[in-house]
Image (cartoon, rainbow, N blue to C red; front, side):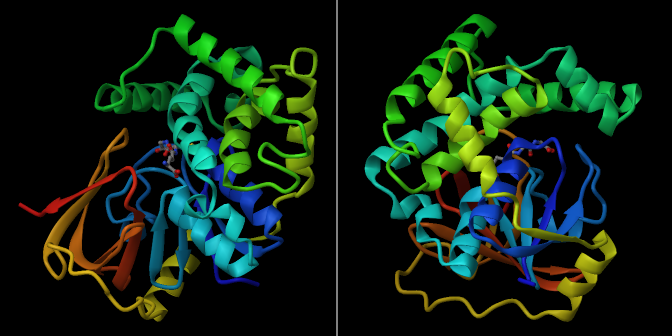
Length: 306
Ligand SMILES: N[C@@H](CCC(=O)N[C@@H](CS)C(=O)NCC(=O)O)C(=O)O
């Protein structure tokens, strides 16, 4: 069993991206199911203010955003192609677009009765109302400019056409999958597998690719409780970080780190490591003791804490 714990929920596309990468890497992992919206009191000591899902944990180290999480999965499963920075410029540009613009357009335009029935299987009507309000509030504070529904539908259709042309081999960028495939997969999973929107007729190669992606499975999952995960963090010591080679301006100082797009709730702590890919913030938490919270550089804003 790897020490990796994934804090996630069933209906979350980015959690599905993480589950799919864990499957591709053939890992055994531990699972904590969290609520679809805050408050998440038992995740809070670990996530430290970061509100997006999924979050991964290895002992007293916490990984926010699937970009940092994928590095851990790549390391544990020896799959360097899962790390976006290890891929070509073309793949990196593709990932930037699909993980943000295409994701938002796919999710916002997916809604239908099939999806409603699926969501109501996981939660009550009252909870669904609360979830919608939560997401409207999150959207209103977002820095990402919202397109009209028509433009979003056009973007999704153009994206599917583009994928169909990319698929001359088994995967989007060749014979083996890489970070680009996993970024494209989760939004289409939401549309096809949750909302029941067929792509087989109009985009047969994309449909066959989705099936190939799903054939990797989700690895071997062992459910543990949120209390178990907290206890694991409490018992652990944060990992030794690589030697700091460049002098970063805020190193050793109290900082604030927050996503630059949506769900911009910040994490406060001491900046203990920084390179061109990663930021690590150290915190002393009343519940779990000392932890290190890891973020990607890309898509996060680092500033001095007020
Ligand atoms: N860039 C983030 C995006 C994560 C994301 O947007 N997650 C959604 C769920 S799929 C979320 O957190 N929604 C708000 C919530 O669940 O509270 C990543 O790669 O992990």
